[in-house]
Image 1 (tube, rainbow, N blue to C red):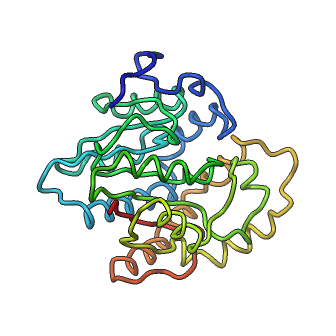
Image 2 (cartoon, helix red, strand yellow; image 1 turned 180 degrees about the vertical axis):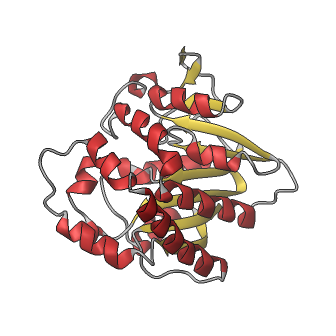
Image 3 (cartoon, helix red, strand yellow; image 1 turned 90 degrees about the horizontal axis):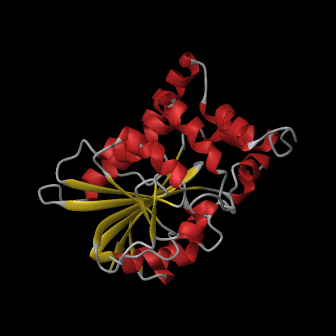
Length: 274
């Protein structure tokens, strides 16, 4: 690992020029995520699927490093912290996000970096990027950087929003650059040198309702902001949140039965460095 260029708030920074603000998404959004993640079916069920995939594709009998790109407030890492022999590293382009992550996980190592140019080479066992690549214009540069950072046989866990026809002003407010098709994601990963181990859609059971909602929001109110959109999307009444949680359980059950779901609001991939 290359030496850090500097430190900000005690966090090693490898891309300090981007640590405070850039065009990926507003750095002020982390406070909302930190506040609402625990109570949102979206984040709970996503964590459950990520934990399942990590258990399935990782040898937990030996120590495994797991670095999350764009770890935000550390919610995913908190879920993985329960697993045996997982040595966690959180990385984020914004130092502001890492300060919230440190509150959740004071014993985890955190670094600030640019995922397009990571300071690792053949060093990490597993890398995750969950709803991150869609924020980065040069997503293929990230894939190549991840390939370099992983050890041979290392795994890359990914989730991204799927289906460009679902594009709406919500995506614009959330600072997305694109929504992915399965063929696009698989093609880009293979071009970076990866072999696809597993791929499936997610948010399959809720897909009809989600599609209708997105199509109705093609012209969302111009008064929306990033933070307002985040609250609208993830904060639901408790009874509705519980219903959504239960319906997402159908997706997880089908995936555990070996079904690769054909459509859904999200796409999940496990890729391997050859």
